[in-house]
Length: 426
Image (cartoon, rainbow, N blue to C red; front, side, top):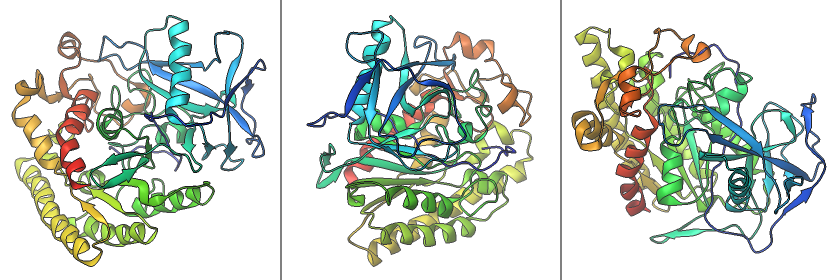
């Protein structure tokens, strides 16, 4: 969540689904994708190809390097899989491909493709693309036969996430033309060495696709270069207007802002609360029925503030304490005012504190230092860095990957801890 001098970019990302549609819109062609991306996408195009992105070394958690293959159709290694649907627009910076194919169908194409090539992989992510040299675009499932799951009395077909680099999976990477974060050090578009918390929540617990409008470096309020909550909502609203059959009432919304507000933005707890007040009501007015807003952890424990004085650390810690109390008051007020919405406040603070205070319980060897051997510069995100020997020897069993961001192991642990809390509230 450190400041990164990048231009604003907003797209969305999705991962796997866990059911199949009655009618597949996946086909095949012998025509290969073009290599070089044009100045614009063909908005009238009725199909696209599948880029199967993956982390290369599933046995070495400290190795974040990635690669990708074109999805292939059937048993032929010559035919390319194509997905029917339509693009959001002809823009190349911010786009998305709408399709009636489920994410599981698309993911299955990638699994079959990589298995046939005897490629060892993990953290598989399918992206939409018409060109070899292009951005990574998401597939948005639309239509009247979208797979759903039931959790309690709630029917869900997807999750949508708003936030900063703790939740960003590709947006800053696309916006920086593939330079930030360095993909040899951070897993493709992620500010970690693998999947992040909401991807694990999707993959292991809620089991519906996860889409993120989160962008690295975002604060809760509007920003000139990095979009805050309201600006992310603007983008979300513009995308859903072009989706056929989208039922917002079947979406679980999750919002996590605050680290940048406190550490680099010098904002107060009231600043974040006021931003949340406006944007959460706006989200409710769009028709949202399930909204989760996370408490904040004690940021005084992160490596980024290791050099701060004790009084500065205490002030930072107290900001989270004050914010969490005021967020609890806000959520209770929203519950009273809008009882038709399920308002959820997952206790991220308690989950993170549990990990920090009991690292051995979760299999960590280090809960204070970064896995990466960093130069303590924002340029690290461009130049990259190598893991410390201790981190390699423990196979990435550190709480922190870099100065501000957890390892994928920590993201998974947080997801595991909070999953039941979220599910019980639905």
